[in-house]
Image 1: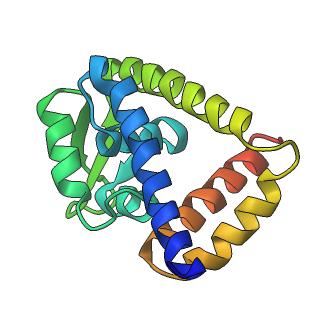
Image 2: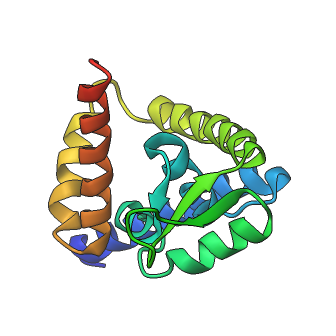
Length: 160
């Protein structure tokens, strides 16, 4: 196997292992990793239009409406017409959605702690830089960049 092919499959296998670990942690909450991502987006970034959720979604950028509908059916989010643009829906967490999002955050924290434990000390920035190079400029990269920019903007607003 050529190095590039091995790297490709190692990244794929790593992603699948991480997603499986996340799914197992979320099982008791009865949400999928994709649904959990929507809940966390709304918890961190506040109410969003469907388009706004889609811009921040890494797991399934092409299908936020299906995820939001499932979450709305479970009463974890509400969808209301935007006052400024009646054609748009604003998606918000319900009280139960906030509770589940808090539990999702705990599951994510355990997964992140495991990753931190497995990485050699001080290697995370180097690995992040290499992964950005491999990621390129596709839709998943754009969603992640949008999320990072939104997080930085929030920190400025909050004086952090």
